[in-house]
Length: 493
Image 1: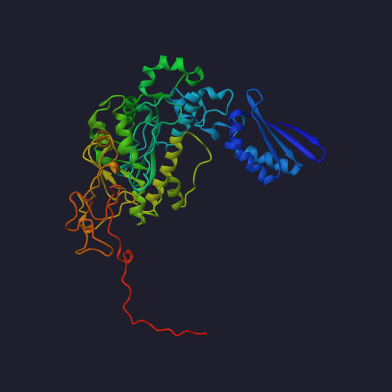
Image 2: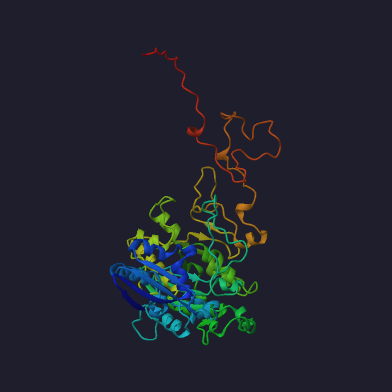
């Protein structure tokens, strides 16, 4: 950084990478640099034509230039000044490969975090070391309550399901593969990191921690081809990851110590997976168990872990009797609802950071009297899922019968994939009896089910897109004018 004083004006220059300059300039020059100009009165010029880097020049009065310089430094996270605690680690590179590895030399680096196997191992060890220590060396801290809560977080390249427009509350896996970050787009990249914290529901305390980076087997099979396509900086010399089957084996070795029982004596009812969303246990983990080929993980083991779980979104709705619109739908909002701090100042990895928040929310719920129970269950990992509460956006309707204490089941992911389309693109389901049209034509025309209507017509109240809806409320229907004698008025000059 250099400074020059030309009379009343001061000029400062700042050397940045081309990627950082692009962030400042923004599309069409309407980026943060323009905002800094408007708020400080200084002139900010971004020059991206100088060699491998770029120059940012700030001109104006001394006070305005000083203020603009501080704002620019705050807007751009400069790589050379960022510590591991400020950036965290890239879970792609920790698993052995990241396409963004070549950015380290002349750009700001990978957005996911640092590319260092050593730092990734240190951060993982530091996170695991925060688990409670046993009274006697060599023993494990054991949970006295049942079921032991396994607060679970996952991260990877899989796209999270979104709420399609017009279909509130319908969580649909993406149609076709989309991936983010530094991978090659294979199915195994859906899960690259797994964090679990065991919580004793009786004492409302943490018992133990488990964490692994998960390496896709496909990367090993395509190692030679990948190294020909990508520079050496994209590959970790000593990745800290393990194949998913080895991760599950380590989990089975860790779990009996948390329960103080032999593995053969543990029943599915002794543990309960707790997650921020249904998606991880319902879809992501079973799908990962069948990659790169179906049956990679034994079906009985999948049934043990993924046949029942607890979703914190539904816990807030039931425990605090919140209406659907008021229930928090993210961990940050859940923490705010409970009066907890948002996030830690230290960054680890995406999965470890989320799990820290998940455990914090779970412990606070236990302290406030929450009694853990499953909010979703199924007979097997590949079977239909039953839910304790309606899906978000769905409202209980009189006339809809519950099955086993739960609303009618949604189809599972395997069924949707097999049919090749999402449920909201299928034909409309039959209209419940409560939505049956009243006798006689409603005001304004004949109903869709009125006798004489052509065969095959849409059900009463159905939209053009095939989504059923209830008949309009009485106050939304045309109302007759009140019958009253006509009033006479006299002209007034």
